[in-house]
Amino acid sequence: MSNLNILIVEGNLREENQNFSEVGIQTHTESLKDSLNHFTNDLNFDVVNPSSDENLTLVSEKLSNYDGLIWGGSSLNIYNDTPEIKRQIEFMKECQKKVKNILAICWGMQVAVTAAGGEVKKATNSHIGIANEIMLSKDGLNHPLFKDKDKKFNSPAFNFDEVVTIPSNGVCLASNKINKIQSLYFNVGDTRIWGLQYHPEITYEKMISLIEFRKDKLIENRKVFKNEKEIKDHISFIKDEIAVSNKAQRMIELKNWLDNIQRNH
Image (spheres, rainbow, N blue to C red):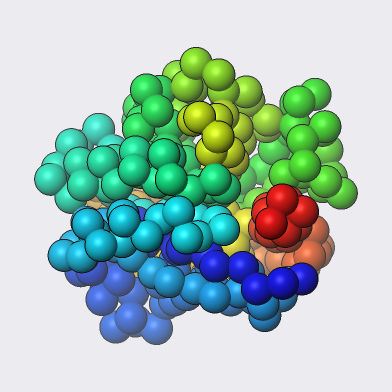
C-alpha cells in the first residue's frame, strides 16, 4: 500500500475535546487515527476543525491534494443551526466538491447529508454506547464498504438524531429498529460519500467511558435512564458484547474504505 494523504475533520467543539482530555477520554480524532493505523501505517494525517480553525480558506484550497477525508462524530445537533454548525456545513460542501472519497461517521454523515440537500431530525429513540441488530440491505450486501461484513451485527454507537431524508441519488445500505438509515452512500459529482451512523472506529470501552462521563445528562436532561442503576445495567450489557466482539470485524468498514481508495489511487 502506497502512502495515502487523509484529512480528518474534527466535529466536536474545542471545549468538548478539552472536557474529554480532562477526564482521560480520547478525542474522536485520536480514535480515528488509532483505528485507521490498526490496518496500515502508510497514512499521512492532517486534522482540521471547521468550527474553530481560522485557516479554513487555506485548507479548502488544498482539499484536492487529499486521497480521502474522514469526518467523525460530535455532540452537536445539526438542527440547532449555530454559527459553528453552519461553518461545518459550508466546509462539507467544499469537501464534496474537491475530495473524491469521503467517509462520514455519525455526526459526519448528518453533516454530509444536510450539505447535499437531505434532512436530519431528532430521533424518537437513541443509541447509548451500542447499536443492536444492524441489518445490511440488499445494496449493502453488494457494496464495497461492507466487504466481508456480517449481514447482521452490533456496533458501538451514540446518537440522538437520525437521517430522515437522504440526498436524491442516495441509497440506504443498512438499518436497524432505532434508525432506518444506519448507512448510506451517495455521490456529489465525482465525489463518493459513504456514510455510517454508528462508530466502527470507537471501542466499546470508550463508549462506556462516555456514558459514565455523561451520566448526569443522560438521567436529568436526556431522560434516557431513570437512575444510576439503569446505567450500570446498561454498561453490563455492553461489557457482555465486548466479550464476544471481534475487533477486525467491528472495524472492517475502515479497512474497506482505505482499500477502495488504494484501488483507485
